[in-house]
Image (cartoon, rainbow over all chains, first blue to last red; front, side, top):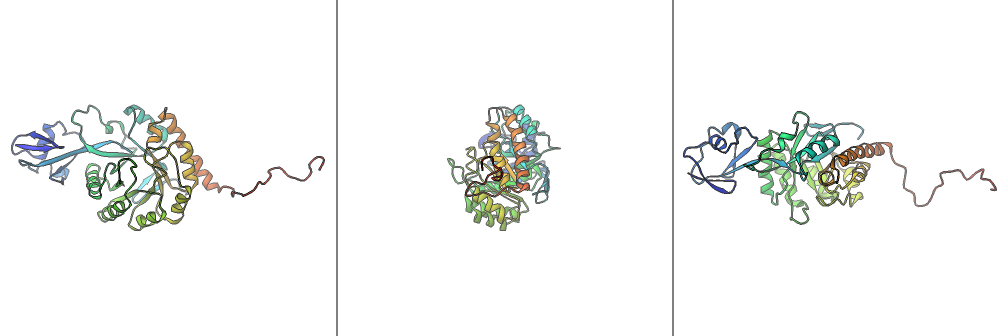
Length: 66
Length: 257
């Protein structure tokens, strides 16, 4: 299925959960927050939240800043 | 002012200096500079993950000793700032947020109206809001009334190093607010830090002043000393400013007098 992640289209397996996608991207042990279609998916729901065709994900983390 | 720790809502910081983690040449210098500054709270930004990054910021910050203060830097609308604040809370399980709603890219000045509205909304959602704002004393009062845990007036524009442009306004803000006042932005060198504390502020937040010094670690150490000097001078109660001269040596008993 086609999903937009951080503004870029990506092909991902069908029926993937947010947790599956983070694993696929090598982020499973990094500190990240996930938004799906503008709504935050809480950490404890990552393995329960299915991602669908056309969904827009934002995956963010902490960087240096003032 | 005489109490050592800085209380921000439910949070307590030991150092009156808060430093940023941006603009450093590398993570190693950042780590050493933070250490030299004595800060136990650093600001961090929220951005899209860089999938190819080998090492990350958090690899270089000891979270058992340092409180992370997420910011909403780069947000030009109220909605973006709210969204970023909520992401920060999800990331860090913290209610602490440095709220910035910026009006334009060149000046990076805060949008006063959007900042005030966003403060009200975030306070209602349970955030401990540290509101980055201008040096306008009336706006500072509104932000306090809106529930900000701290009001953070700029000394001058972010990254400009111009120091405190309106000392009078900073003093007015200190005098009229009950919540901690933290000068944030424009601090360029150690004397700016000392001046801020001599005006009675409760804290100083800076990033570029250290990160863009030729020797950031040395400058961070200087900032730490300036914090001590400024707070001590304020507690000592400075001499009054006089219009005319007042001799330090006695006029009586002068030879040939």
